Length: 218
Image 1: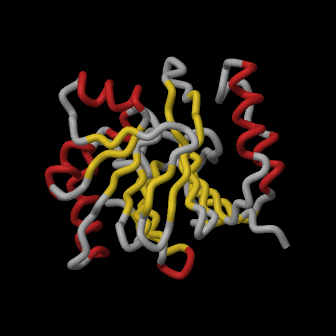
Image 2: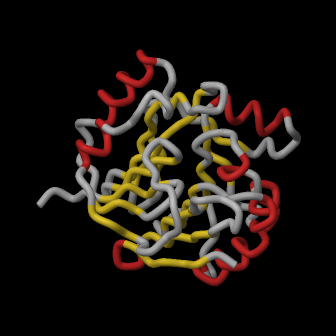
Image 3: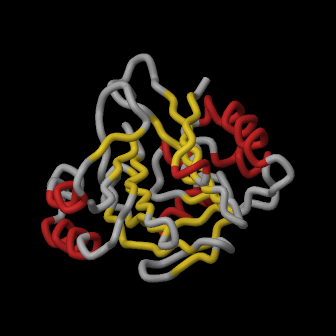
């Protein structure tokens, strides 16, 4: 059963699963905006429990969006169960991810977004950043919630090991500079994403694995 942590005064809910055989956590996030957004679904095995947890948090509100940064099992393995449980929701993803989801018969309920585009969440707004994700360099997306200054960093910025604290402190520019060729093997793509991220005024990095990172300038 995943652990749940409230972040940013309850505006962001972090669901964490620690697989017994892997040295990392799998994180999903619920942003409780006017149009609620789930970031990632985790794998298929834990999706039913995640849906129960989402219903408990959402109450009468409807889940509107499920953001999938890239096509990999811990990002979207539970997409069918989540979209079945929340029929008003659609997957938000890159064109490449949408093709993979449809090609595997997982869903055609996709809202395709390109880098530079935005998504209105009512009392918040996402902007999307190109993410040459490590799975075959299929083009994915990172999402930056501009109202609350949250970067959903997927696998680009993360931590290995068990979760001892839900949030730890770090520094934004240090995290950007630490993005390695192992994360983005294409040198031009690596420099491009660092240039795109560096100017952002990020308050919190909602990582795909490990604790969230408080990088607010002090």
